[in-house]
Amino acid sequence: MHSRRSFTRSIALAGMGAAGLSLVKCTGKTSVNDPEKETGKKYKLSLNAYSFNQPLRDGKMTVHDMLDFSAETGFDGVDLTGYYFPGYPAVPSDEYLYSVKKKAFHLGLYINGTGVRNDFTWSDPAKRAEEKKLVKEWVIVAEKLGAPSLRIFAGNLSKEDFSWDEKAKWIADDIRECAEFGKSHGVMMALQNHNDFIKNAPETEKLLKMISHDWVGLMLDIGSYHVSDPYSEIADNAKYAISWQLKEKVFINEEQVDTDYSKIRDIVKQCGYKGYLPIETLGEGDPALKVRTLFNKVTLLLNS
Picture 1 (cartoon, rainbow, N blue to C red):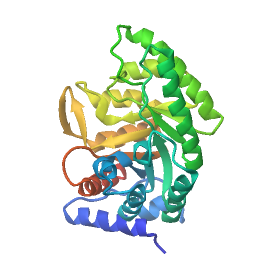
Picture 2: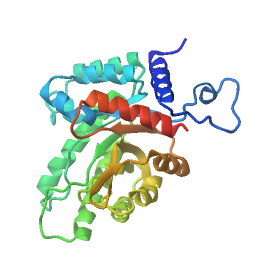
Picture 3: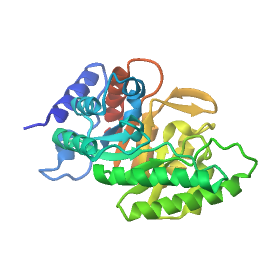
Picture 4: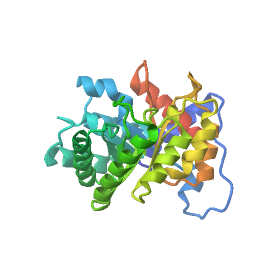
């Protein structure tokens, strides 16, 4: 019997096929019971909660509602950004966390991550100690949810007069400390390139090498490279990816253009990434419609 998510995905793809698009079947050896042979599915898609930022913040939607939407749309997982849990940045009650975990389990959704809004760019060790405390508290949240990763930032609030290299040194030290804590709880640090302290592929790689910790990887945000060839920089950083943010738009220099998902598909294939691929929609418009549209587009092109 097919699951509701499989049925929903079949309907979505059939609708796109009727619009003149076709799903290219995979080549290569497959066994009789190979699910890829039966469904054409190769990649697992996750929904980043930020796609519903406004309704979640306004109280028009709850995290539990978002889980229902994710399952009905056909997602395999969810990335539950911490901002939308009651009382953030305070840690939610165990009762609440376990209700989310239970609902996701019953819906067949994997919680592949959560995340905080931290900032390690401050020179004041006391300020950064508070930021590390926030990260460590949410490592425990991720552990309780069964999520293997916590999204963090380098930050961008501090405008103090220190060089990039000076700031990078203490940022790397702070992230390494958090990673050691994460390691003891089975939670990886997923550092997002966010056009903040790290703005391009060379800076991202340099900071990751300075951190040099096997419990730290990159949440590769394809929409945060404001350069002439974002796909080249995405490809350069892809080897560090432990999670992604697939968006509707990328920047070419400072101009937003539609993402070329055939190029993203090729990069994902070439880097050998095997994990979940979270998608995130931004900007004006009905978020439910925007998410479904991007879900259908990404499903079709990544599996072609």
